[in-house]
Image (cartoon, rainbow over all chains, first blue to last red; front, side, top):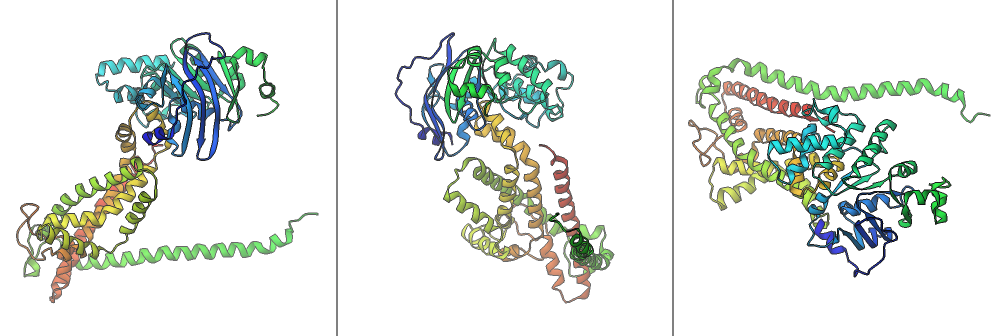
Length: 274
Length: 292
């Protein structure tokens, strides 16, 4: 499937486009990126840079392409067979669609947390150890350490340390989502993509995840899709506003929310539509 | 002014509930029919066959004398046959299912294969017997051996195993795949560590049910020339053999009344084995069904 998608992707020549703002080193550089599902175009000429060690929020109404966009960043979007892409996405200077750059390698560097918690029907320990194991780490002692470190990183260790061998499905929804974050941390990625990670959770669990995101951004670059504008305002440094598959506005979060440049952004964040 | 006329509702009320009652009874009798037939069958088999059932019946070879006739060669033959059929059909069947569900791209060709696998499941077993006779016994010169019989049986139940394995794999939620791929797992790692562990209960259930069908099949083995009277145990997969249903079939064909009772005893043994296999399938299904 992956090879088929690669043939469909036509990279454009690397034209130098100045990023709108550059506070720190950028980890992703997206240029003229368009995407189709069959004949339906979902993204139009998306173009911006995602900075390292920041939280970048992607907001917009339902169906605006924000989930599609974040899934393109680790090529998960290719699981849809009919997808076609044009343009380029560079991760750390490497074209992620280049045949030389293995999709498995990309996904090892770029972890993902999904909208609904999706732990495996295995023990808590095995869930976290899954990533290291598939990448060839077999030593029990190392795995033990990774599991502890990752669960601590996801603020779940104290709640589960006495029942690591129990099935992950016995955890609450919020705990499951933090377990999925721990599972993602276990392969020590550079970037964590989060696709509406709190939309299936109650307010208390949501607060915990938000707090966690604040802590994680010290070590990771985080891209978070959310339909909750307050959440974007609370936790992100940069915000991109998507509408009908286009990036309408992309700037520092406090600027975008206090002083939006585009009329449509203003309408959206003041709740006039969406 | 209300559009819903309360009087009409009242008038229809009793008629509706009577209809419901009639349907209830109708469906009950449909179910009861099957159960009654089963009870009659079991009663006849047990009343005729139970008298002959003793340890000697299980440990004796077939004999000219009904009182000495036993089913040892047939039981051992059926076990040998399963020893060939089970691994061959499960490996090929699960392999095909994994390819079709996970690796094959969805196009006209794979759809064509898919339809034909379902069609194969409906082909009469005697046709598979003819195929086995032509290909395994004659063309590949396996003779009337356990190997030829086992491979023929594998072909017979292969479509059932493929379809049930596909269903087991398809029942796994997409988010499990996403979770694994997003960690940088390859397709095979995902299949090996996520898909198969979750699908194995379903695959085993389907496999056991298919194997229990193979144990009860007679026609294809008659076709390839399984023996009906042997007084020795098979030594290896190239030996001649007989199986339970053929032994039973042979006994019912004898002129002596006595042998018909022996056949009933054989049926009891066959039924016990089938019930045992089916209950294992049920246990596996119940134990692992609530996973997602």
